[in-house]
Image (tube, rainbow, N blue to C red):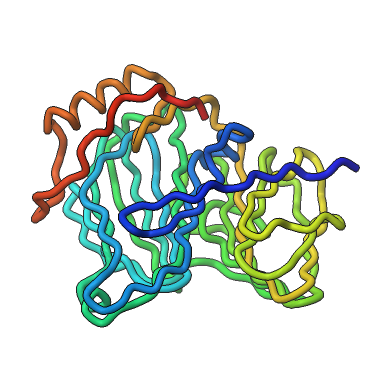
Length: 293
């Protein structure tokens, strides 16, 4: 059997927060609806510091933020103002247009904290790209979990492993956090055509192939490989049905280039809903050719 393909992430920096980003890449533009995957690396912030991303726009996607450690304050142009803690799901659907900010909450800014987590973007189906924007917060206690034979699963979004998340995804999706004790195994089911694993901590293998630490391993359609933990391991699995080609330009995702061009023009002109109480914003970067996902 040939080796499973692996996407090595590139290291980015967003407002001083180090990020590993395996999606999108030249090798793989998307996995199911997932067109963007950011691993916010463990970053200790001393007192009087924290992450601060000023208001910026989105179209055509849903953002999902899931933290392992720390907290973020989410504010958006819908009037949402939500404290997001470890294990919660922050779910914002941009639709035809939304703006938001993400920052370390004041209490942790004052005391100091560590931030560690994931943010993914899920492209909306073409029929939903221009829907009204919305926001929902799902506390950690609302997410379904299972535990058996050394394998703990938390279903962050979608359905799979006989679990159903309350997060209101709009296309067939699986997004799960996996915790395996040393020696535990888990067969990866054939529930979706596109699947991938990302190893956050530990040492594990898939059908004898070692998983790269903090790299995205792609699972070919139709295969049912076995995940084995050599040490206690922490992973996430993302999967879904193909969403179709998407263009990505800055924070905009769309099936039609005209929607991206329109969004760029609107943000540049200041013709965009603003986040209440916020005066600073991230300006539109220089035009670059849109990539396809």
